[in-house]
Length: 265
Image (cartoon, rainbow, N blue to C red; front, side, top):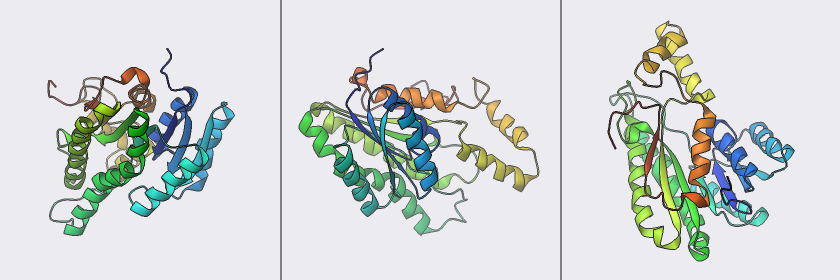
């Protein structure tokens, strides 16, 4: 299947590991030139870029914290200089730390909204003008199932709050920019088997004294699929949403969670 991505430029934040990295690899295989943006772990960035290059793709690596406005501006500028203006944007930043309401500070609430929502605003300020001018663009915000149905797990008050605002922003933008051939969609990430997810359950295991697999089984027993998701399953959906074939999929919040959420729509 030709996804119509040859010659497109994609910028992937959080692109050096996990879901972002695999999405960058798949987009490169489809013919995109990819800017892999990661945090300050240069080794992980170099490894991700090297994998793409060794497969015959085109990629650059950029180290930047994509929750900071100045870093976002620098990363987009480097992408434009080396590859061209991004036609495709995958926004993927880490969520805030766990904590109960009585434990977290007002400043942490402010940080959660800035990191989850204002970071997307800053990024789109830099990338939307080109997409509007050319009459084509794809924006996918990697979010969480907690944005639609706040998770019942203890200590998720920050992520449940910050993620929901980003979904509302994405939906609003999908209305404004559809006339320019730009789609804006959000992904409700379920329990996907990334290193970050497993490290969370490792910490929970250490705190509770119970084996990690035992704790995870409590979760997977509530998922109709009966398992955690694979990174490839996420990345394949993201790649399709970035494609020319997905031009009529707009303003959606798409759960990838094995059926965990209970809403019928």
